[in-house]
Structures are given as C-alpha cells and as structure tokens.
Length: 257
Ligand code: ZN
Ligand code: FE
Image (tube, rainbow, N blue to C red; front, side, top):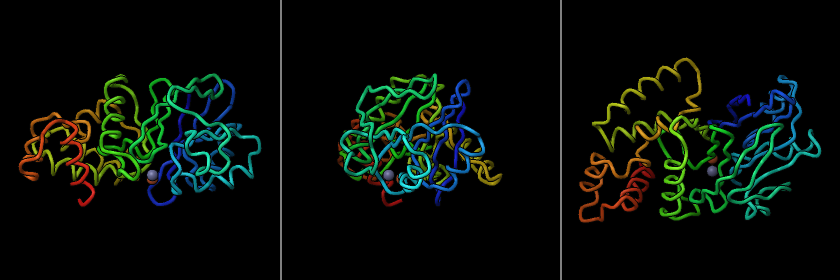
C-alpha cells in the first residue's frame, strides 16, 4: 500500500492510501477538500473510502465537498459518532475490518481525545488521528485520563516497534520541547529534536514516526521512566506516582505548556 501524507489547513495531516494493484484509494481524515481532491486526481486513483478517526471539524472539514465530488464513497467512523460525522455510512467499532483494494485494515477503539476516537491499522501502518502524536498525545476533551492511558498502552504494547505512526497534526517540535522539559536527561529526545529541526527547516513533515521512536521519546508512553516520575514528584508533591497518576499529571502539565 502506498501512503501519501497531505498537509491540510493549518497543521493537519490527511493521508491518501492507495492499493497499487487495483488503483483503489482511501483518505484518512478528510481535513480539507482541495488538497485531497488534487491528490486523488494527480494519483489517478479511484477514491472509494473515507476513514475518519474522530468527529472534530479540523479532521472532517473536506468531507461534504468530497462526497459531492465522489459519489458512493464509504464513510467510516465510530458507530457512536453517527450523528457527529455527516455522511457516515459505515459505522465501526473495535476490531472491525476495513478493506482498501487488496489491503485489509483493522479498527482500534482508542477513546480519550473524544468518545469516538479510533485508529486504523493496515499491516504496520497505524493512523492515529489525535490520539497519538509525534512525541505527544491528544488533549482529553471527552475521555478520562485512564481511557487515554489504556489506549496508548494498548498501542505501545500490542504492536511491533517498527509500526509507522501516521498522526493527525504537525505538533512534533513543540511536543519535543515538552518532552525535554519533563525528561531533560533523555538523549533520544535531544537527537529527535535535531532531526525534527532539520525536517521542518527543509519543509518536510515529521510524520510518520515509528512506535520505537515514540517509545524512546514520547513522555506519554514513558510514565514508568524514573526521569519522568521524578519531574512529576517535584511538581506535584505528595501525588501518587503509579503510571496512570504520572500520565494524568503529564497531561495536566502539557495542557498549559
Ligand atoms: Zn481532534
Ligand atoms: Fe485535531
């Protein structure tokens, strides 16, 4: 499967997924109409499906116009978001399969950012929307810290380290500043900051990363690391220091960083 990342709106990413054997394509998160329509035309593919990770306007801004241009497209999203994603005609939940040409994908239910947040896994390509970012995770708009912590834990521990993480926003540089702030001794964070600086200076996206990159640098996947536990202990004196409490404290710190 070929994957093209499409910068949309201010700092969103949509993704065009192409089955090269059949020319059948899908879009993950139709953030904006024009760049997606152009990419489909440029690639000369047949758009058959739109995969929504969640209902937020910045991720579905191009949906109505795309449905007008491409009739008969399957629109996937979590079943609970039927009223919040206009045109959703293929409601899914944990474990559902999604077929794009010859490629079989699987839905992971990952609530936390919103109640209906899902990720799509095709082979070793994971599309995470606003659940898992480069060096960060989404804000908790509708879910509890436990839901998000569990969702990230499942991703981190059930998928191979080589899994590529295709995320929904270009937040990586700022996320790494926060990662450095909470774990100043982490050399992998410093190395990734240099890499990301070079990528952004060259106008390149920082997506995709790998699960191994995230395990080494993403504070929200590192709630057991002593450096991070120490930071939380200093900032939140007397608080519990189990992984979920550390995660909750990190998310609170990141909200105001
Ligand atoms: Zn969102
Ligand atoms: Fe978003």
